[in-house]
Structure formats: C-alpha cells, structure tokens
Length: 85
Ligand SMILES: [Zn+2]
Image (cartoon, rainbow, N blue to C red; front, top):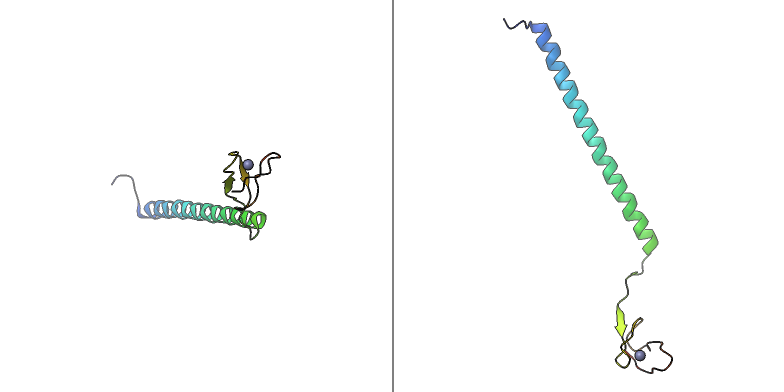
C-alpha cells in the first residue's frame, strides 16, 4: 500500500511538526528582534531629543523676507534690517 508503513508515517508527521515548530520559533525570534531594534531606535531618538522639540518653525521677516529660526517678535538678524516677525 504506497510503500508507507505506520511507523514511517508517524516519523514523517513528527518531522513535519518539528520543521513547522522550528519555523514558528524562528519567525517569533525575528519578531522579537525587530521589536527590540525598534525599541532601541525609539529610545535613542528620545535620548537625543530630550524633552525639547528639535523642530523649530521658521519665521519670515516681514521687511527683508529672510527666514530665520526664532520666536515671533525676534529680529531676523540681518545687519541692516530692523524688521520683526
Ligand atoms: Zn529682516
């Protein structure tokens, strides 16, 4: 009958289950590694940023049109310009 005996089928089933379990294990390990890496990147980013927002809005000087980083009301920093954003 197809050359299969019950012990052979059992061994075959065990091999298939073993391979499947091994594959699941590797997949799970990969997921954990990915999560760890994301966590590390996120932590590193938080550490470099600190609590301050590193992104600053640029202000445009209404007189000379220069864009500068600073708060509204500060001067643009151009020598001949007294304009305030
Ligand atoms: Zn200006």
